[in-house]
Length: 198
Image (cartoon, rainbow, N blue to C red):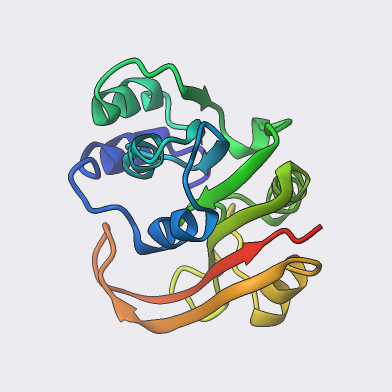
């Protein structure tokens, strides 16, 4: 599925009407008012969480590799927004991220191979300002898609190692059957909310 632009164009096309994901809302609550501080929405898709962040006063750097991202996000947020930057780029092409007070990556980081994942994770850690909130969904080894080429699935120990040095506020493991865009599957997901105390 890596760089399967047609898939993501189709997927993002039906996401605009869904609610803001709970992990993003939790991150916003933990971070406090946006006050024109910078948030990064990694794998922003249709821009649902991007819009929520903008509405809460954040300056948002939205990243996604789908080629129609700019148009789809503009439609979701209601057109041009002076506090929004859209970076249309696949993770494998991502070379830097701006310093941020909130980084949200909803169900997006696993869609790259481990080499790319580790490099992007390093960019994420470097982008976190002191006190910044990090909210991510990471996929576990029991997921029914585990082993798919070009994707990353982690053990709980792997995930906790990635969070070394951060103050973990919430760590929820989902290991159960549930719906997906492509049909029912077994989900194994780690929902993580952490704060950079350094």
